[in-house]
Length: 386
Image (cartoon, rainbow, N blue to C red; front, side, top):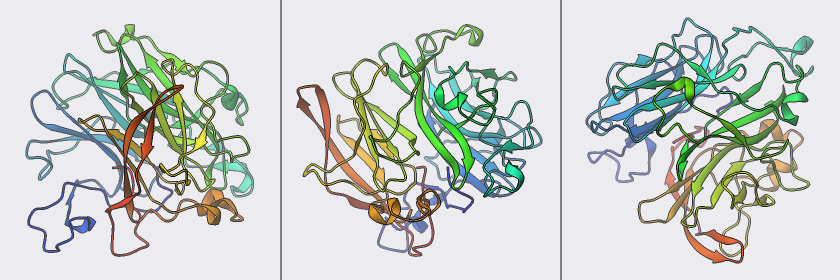
């Protein structure tokens, strides 16, 4: 999630670009949206098209009218179909959609939905006058719809996922009766189950989210069950606490990204306001996790990263790519307001390559030195959520 500032979202690199440097983001192809755009995530459908979901709206992030739409492309992203409203702009806020394709070809879309149409939320004072925040796109219910025609249409009914209450929920201003949360992490498959990330939020204040931690929503039967009413869900990890920063770290642990290693271990990396990304491993399917650590290069030096999305992708050759911004360190964690200052410095975007190695605890990832992947010549332009 970006914090009120617009970002240009592009996919593909033009082979006819006038500039020689394909990393310049102006040489990409823009995905059409209403104005604000967030998280343009793509899956390839079984009929060969690209299906993209985007959170969009006519205003800025978090304003009324924010909703999720889908589009299809049959020419590798050069052109797109007219957007299909998964939720209408006239309804309660619907935001931050991610996709999962199951073996039958059905596609599920998961997103925040302000089903109760709350028009305000309890927050800290300051910065919110009278302790009331009127941005309401990151609360409510985590829901899904599905498509059986490759994203051309979506189910009329939406289905809420029963997310288990945890300590961070009970400690929010509503005692857990209203949930704060969102998600940018892409669902993934482990053996016969699908797992969908979720970022729980403990409060609203400076930097918008004042406390956060990550969980997984595991379904053991969504890959094969055709009746959405019969899909089962479990919230992981076990216990009352989600994925947090290392001991002594800050209160922000969010936008978790996951990859399954060759031995079945799960690797997770996420953002903080400590100046560094955080990583952890699960060796038991997400039920428990290793003590979190700040992510390092192969030589042991800590990577730097602001309060921006970071992603790990597993490639077809079994190796990995890590998207991050290579800014951070002390100037974030020692700032008077790290929770807000950390949103800056999202240009350029960098990539590291990763390979697996054997350790006494199982497989682990070793990361290379970084290389610039995309940039905008204007250093104040921010980019994220590839």
